[in-house]
Image (cartoon, rainbow, N blue to C red):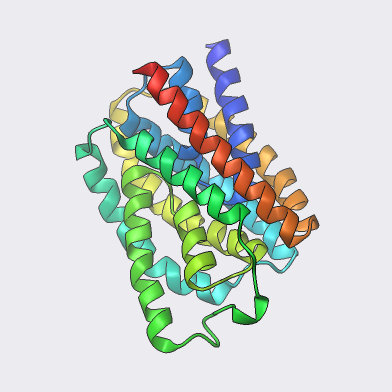
Length: 259
């Protein structure tokens, strides 16, 4: 049991650091770490990762708000359908086979890292709820439903997906995209985790381990968020891109070795 709480605590800290810097969900790093040491079902770990995301995203949200790097109005509109998608996705996630799931997520994460690393931002082209063409913003809201569907069903909690929507569709600069994505991720993770509680409880999962993961996540998220907000946009792009690429590659290698 001692080994268990220590692993969950460290996994939470690493997850919090990555979320604060990148806005990525716990499934990107938390689930692969836990699967190295324990044989929990992927469905249960998706629910656990969503619960960790609730607290990690909340504390990252507080820090990004302090630095004025959250577009609350855009985030609120995107959250509406994203929450609906998270609830629907949570219901159907128990029917999703484990085979190929982590591999797909890892490849997606690595490709995202490359795109962010190479990205150049023209802040004049940023499209927010205040100045975005109506049709484009409505399409972004519709796409947020599918982001929530992915979050509730597969566990990414909308972190990277919302981040990509903000960066490549609405052309947000990286600081504001991460801040707004963790704001939306909080709501997706909240409703998605609640939808998973019954199934997690029925699996006899030791809830005390979740507590250690949450404590570690809050600690890592708070300090990494402050660091992310203190560095220049260009440097943040490179750090975010490199972290996502490495996470994607490591997760893929780990899954291939386990097979």
